[in-house]
Length: 361
Image (cartoon, rainbow, N blue to C red):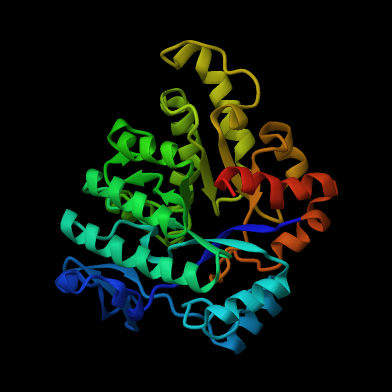
């Protein structure tokens, strides 16, 4: 059985932008330092003259051990495996974890960054060429969700085409892209190309609306729900939209939000459709399967309950490899059956069959 981790990460570094075209040097992201609320210096990525995202540095080995001691979650990674300075180390660690293929997602681009189309085109191209080099070094075991410049939709289509020819297995899209929801007609040219290429849209935990992100990040809770709420809501938006009917072969993946929320959203949709949806149709059957939407569960989810609504064919799983937040658990794939009590046959579907179908492997 080929085990597929649907949610691995890369952490961007200064070297990432060495893959940008030299003619795009003026658009290159760089790091600046500011002081946070407590007066401590904090490194931030700067794009288009704005600080857009904190620089994420891997925890030191001792700090990784402390996190494991306090939470019981395995998060330790070998040096060079997260920033991709040592791709071979990443592959060896995957072997130890029993992972055959890992799908990689960005760290800094789960929020909106560039404000100018030409900047976004240049940065996306640089990122994807970095990822293509990683794919080449890993001989196909490390695949990725292509970063697309949605501020220039025609360029996004061209870039998707290039990326799929160079190892991409999905097209990244945030639940909200600036002032647009993920399923709106503006994105149809990308959906059409993704359908033609046979790859899914990958919706990783994120929020591409700076104002909404800032609002939900206020107070002591920080940004805990500024990413999670839009990601969970994206299932509602997709089912409510016409995307599944307009693009009858297009698949979707929703990653790093867990799956415990899926029953709530599906029950809400089924109650609303007959009276509030423009078609006034009853929403019958398995909603995820009918709409070709896959959700990444986590090893602590109540899968016995979730499966009643999601079914066995539309759940996948991810480790959040490379991060150290509440979703990160490197042995999640090994622990899935033990933690949840579901049958080995269903575990095999979640770890192998379902992600293979989602990504067209």
